[in-house]
Length: 438
Image (cartoon, rainbow, N blue to C red; front, top):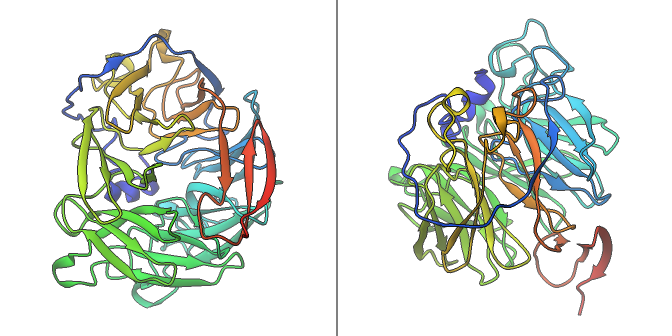
């Protein structure tokens, strides 16, 4: 396993199939068989292990975009950015470590354009922005990560290399996708740097970075450490969780200006990114305990269900009001030749009240050609279908992109904010601009 992936292990990403995990399988309603379609079989040269808490996104042209943390056509393979049309035709837009300072070091050191991309967001200018969890250093002995811009045509520009400040006070290893606020700036988190426990940062589309908050700034780290990424809420603030610091992690709010408030001080850490429900509460998952929970904007935590199987990638709120997610392992199928006796993973649905339904169990096809270990999470496209990735299995063993049917969908971009800015609304595979001014 490459160092670039194990560097992300501080967010529990290292707890994958390479470790034997004690699993508890939840009691859940098993639905009638759902049709899963494998759209892409990664072969290594076009990427490998797509996902790792990096859901696909849909561009304004209707195509899907994503990243792979390793693989690609540039040796030794430090990840790719790819585009996929609705029919499953995949185009590699960029291979990381195309700009090298030889000899290469551990974790992508020497890859000045970055190594190990961690997801994408399409900004209002039409370009895509993301971060890499490694690379970016000017020499072969540093690999702090980067923020980059990539055009729909595949031209990549490195906007910022972390650890540019003494003692890495600006952060290291941005291990989650960026979020664009209504002010046009991008916001994100690093899992290291600052005081050693991660940061929240803001970066303009031109690459000017501002560190907004450094975790473990309070006595005994009661503000937490190792943040899991941000969600922009309807009140215009960001919310997130930490996995370390206070016991069991924290739930926090941070304003666009950087004022952080710890709302739940212990036992509130999610594993994947939170999602805000239609009721205004936040929903998330904890991998090790295998639970799904909700937490109010004031910090009241409620455990809704136990799904088991390491639901590491968080949830997606579909247009029918239900939540959908994946378990990394577990499920009904346990193929020791492929899934190492840990289970091959599943897709589940959960109502806001916590009623679980298993929709699909991976490795349901011979030789696991449908893929297994769906670690990338799910997204709902404007055609109503759910799309996701597996990090293993498929025709070549390097993972897949899959589709699971639902109903129609709609999406706004940005997803929330105050009255005033113009937003784009997607539905029936089309985008329309709408002003929210009153």
